[in-house]
Image (cartoon, rainbow, N blue to C red; front, side):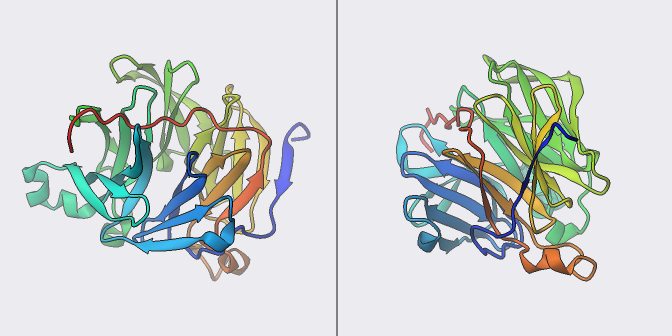
Length: 314
């Protein structure tokens, strides 16, 4: 423990009061940070040149779980939404679907209704991976009914891994030979061999990379920095940790609320979203800043943030 750098955060950057804040994404060109509240169906946008005073909230017609930029398109972003992939206007948030997840049979069976997107990430060849899960507002406790999808630049849709329960952080090693996938209830981030040319995830090679060491906590979203280290939100623990490529914790950030969800790097700062406290009677102090957004200087930049390559007309 003596070799672990400890950082304690006392105050939020933004008192956002999200029910389920997620997916902080740095739009480098405009120097804006956007993130979502999946349950409240909202998009949050902050101009980082201006700071918290520029924060605006946009109501959405359906939930969005994650977003990414589109190569060559400064006006719109791509997202994983309630029913599929879509694009939205960066200024207004106005969304439209471009590819639905579910077959007609899955719609008729109610699976589409029971599901929503969660986390996602774009690989170095511009493919957008998005994981779906049972919507807890509809089914309560999620079951193993989720699917990891991939949208390719030609807008073809591929089912990559199923079943999953709560798909979260996804990323690749800097050499693109390994893909990391989190299924939170397992308590682990798994590593898989990855063929970046084809986009094939070799599911037979899955091996544990990182396991949450705190009882009652699970790995949620994560991001990677330019040194190949991971910043992992550990939901239910008040902590975000920096994990080395060897899977060892080297930095521990303690926050004033337990249900931290996802980190994202902008410049040399880490922005962390959070969710509503699940047990406010037991943890009243955590509930005071539930759903807030936090900022932590970390002194390292992000790994390359890939953009979706859209070669087909939406």
